[in-house]
Length: 99
Image (cartoon, rainbow, N blue to C red; front, side, top):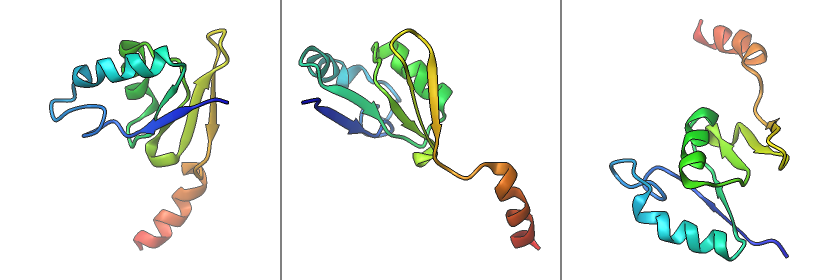
């Protein structure tokens, strides 16, 4: 059975100064137990990639308020599952609403 923790970043895993240092020991303990740590945030994929690199996380992550899920296949190849409606579809609707 796979166990996992889904967590926000801002104000949760990251403190008020955007440091994840206070959570380092918890992240390490979770990783040692084989528990996946899955960030779920309003941040962009690029912002989360930086955090994941620093925290040495390899687990999937959810970005832009659920707009997409990102991960890698274990061989370094990244994948993305887009969940939200693409901007090219939304733009005409947004323009119409703006009028």
